[in-house]
Image (tube, rainbow, N blue to C red; front, side, top):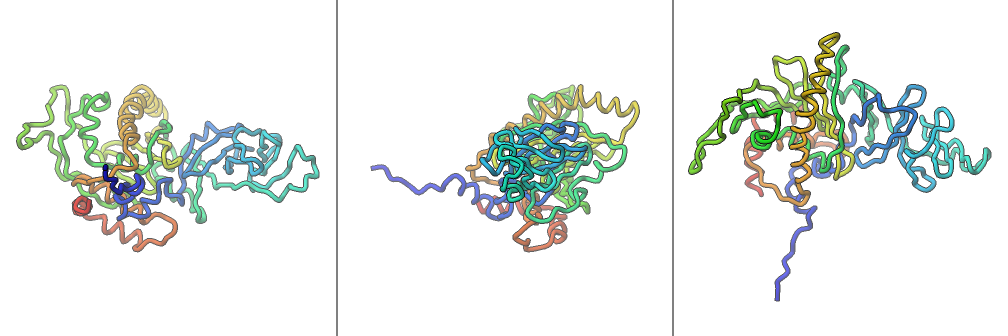
Length: 388
């Protein structure tokens, strides 16, 4: 007779790998108490637009030049308000039975098919969400706590006058946490992006790097390279990687990550910066917002935009980053993990997420955590590896 052994449920296996970071483990749908970019401002007009954010279903609409966000479900029968109409200024009407809601308050102003004296008016409302527009983007807050100023969650570089922002917004499969970890991960680039990407075809990627993680005063964690080896002798195997004569060593850049989940990539000698937000839709999908920003104007702005359209968008934002997105989509929720030394960057990020806004209160302050993270964190990864 076959012996049936107890096997942990898939969700328990993954949770056992994150038990040192309980807030992070619970944040499959995102860290709620933050502002997130959800779409380009230019794409929102009087026609309702549906968006998902941190597990919430939202409808966005513009009225009188102002953007509004409401729960995307009519309380009558649950039909999405995003298929509705704007029959009157300042309102949104459900297409099914004509329930009409105030955009600012969410209060039911009229039930058109029940006549102008409908007794249900004023007794029903849909939830509304804070909305802001900055840097050519629409930002939405779905948190359980009062919303902080939107500027608290937007990098100051994007708010400086004269900054031009270009980019791409796409929906990807997988969990936002795995995407954020990939973005700040030390080890994957040397392997994953070595093959099949035009963006790195002429760059000599190192075999490995040794880095430490430091905390910046403005809330970022940054990877700082201590050693970069273009090739190495691997015992019993030989040298790797194979050097190609047309490839040249690239200039260094600094990769930084910040709550609630976005990275900044910038080289000291460059005016432009590269950004990626991983805005959670739910536990299985996220919206990837990829941007380049630069303080340019006139003919320099034209060159910046053309360079993006002709080179950076097709070869970096699409081909190169699709390699990352595919790996994120292939990362299973049920897989146990065994960390190794380069994963110090990931453990640092997870530890920072424990200090995210919202209940329960953290065991230590964010300043204390950032101070602790200012030291190399390889021992974190080694300790985690030993516990698996």
